[in-house]
Amino acid sequence: MDAQTREQAKTLNIVHEIVTDPQAVAAEVDIIIFGTPVNATLDWMEQLKSWPLKIKSS
Image (tube, rainbow, N blue to C red; front, top):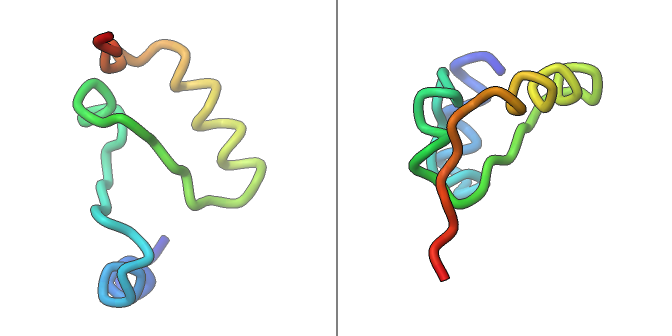
């Protein structure tokens, strides 16, 4: 996503926050949404398997 598209998504409140390194924040967030084409999303999901994620507390 280019800078203009990211800024527009934020301005329109389509997204709460935009990050350029999702792995760096994966352990801090409750939900990760990839706004990418299907093939890119599949690649990200494969990478996600090795990321440290937030542990759900009950």
